[in-house]
Length: 373
Image (tube, helix red, strand yellow):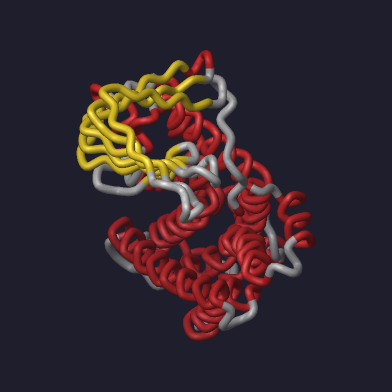
């Protein structure tokens, strides 16, 4: 009995604590992923209701989005699970019973700490490899759908760079793929740009053939000669078709965003952009962000554990309130530190890791203040 008490890590204690934390962690991760996905619900529903995108493609978009949310959802869910499990055990006197039997808070925390290390490395792997892959797949699929359902990319009263053309439409009717009071500036031929205005326009796309036709009606074409000695021309038309080339189905393309680079690609881009200070700083922030968010699980484990030992009543309510409060404060500190790092006020790694350091100090203070009583 005495031997079991003096052990820093006990199998039975590990099994007991893991049971308290694991179920809440899995449930919390699922809930937070769904909550984050709900913020995109209106945007995704537009694809189905207005642009008639198939449920299968929308399901893929949802899956890729949830994958990109993992680095944010996992740390918050882990904080929630630790707070929930430890608060329940403490409120029912189980933590006190273990202490009375000679088991210290450090021994009780060890299984949580080991679990947090495993979760951190899992989160790190997904951040470096799986999440960029999912983000890239989302970008390509979104681009492909935007090409096939081109009206999804257009907004009324807003200038849009539309396949190399600057397009403006005062009114858009998505269901009919129709536009009213259209203005188009075509500068694909830099020596002979065209300014086109029309009363109406209709989009017709054939993704299988890689074709998109913009049919304008009742308008005029203004030919802007760059040479001053040439006469400016105006051509009126009843019907005017503009044919544009699209990528075939499934071959949508767009430039990589920093979030879409996996670890080797990100390291390569850091070397390539060493002379571009702004872009290099952005990539450094992205790299350190992935490591910082992943290892925040260990910080949240310590902070959640020692806050949980202070909770006496209202287990679920207390855990949820503390989780929201800590998560909100951490996120605000993280956003502020990221902004400072991206603006160049602080070194990128200093700014990105600062919230983790501050919350680790807070966890240590909680342990020294209340954990050694």
